[in-house]
Length: 207
Image (cartoon, rainbow, N blue to C red):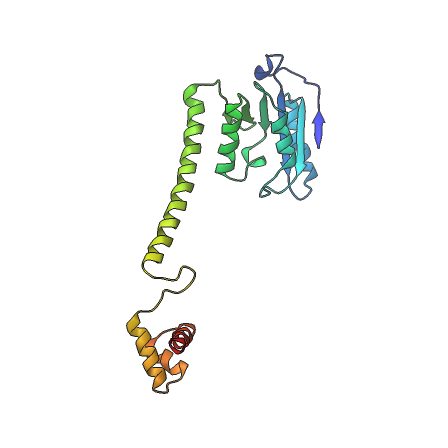
């Protein structure tokens, strides 16, 4: 849903006639009163257009938020009541903030958060640093997973299940089976899982 309003007052960010303040409001489970309240606050703040929708915060795509961002131009300002109206986590927030800053678009919440490219070089750099640190965490986690899989592969462990048993234990399983012991008897004597015992015996019969 999109709402257009006549401004009652001029925002500092709107002194440039070519700039505009755009609002975004979101609620879940048909919370009409909550959505209306956000729209009212954004209207009072001077937003000329408010994009709004009923959508879960966890949804990957928020159509009206995307429309609001695409509606913005250099020098414009996106206003929301709180960060959680638009972003489900830190990473999503940082990605969007950096996208806006790089396009010289401001982001502001009614509870005091502000991000702008022209506020100061240090201020805007903070968001870029946080964004890179968040990427670093993701990349480090991915690399650690790859290293763990590689170590398991080099050590001869199964990547998808239980580690392989030692050749000595395999020989013991085969010997006990040749002596006439049941699978359950072998399990009780060796502590090896029945599925592994079956595999070892089957592989022994095929060789």
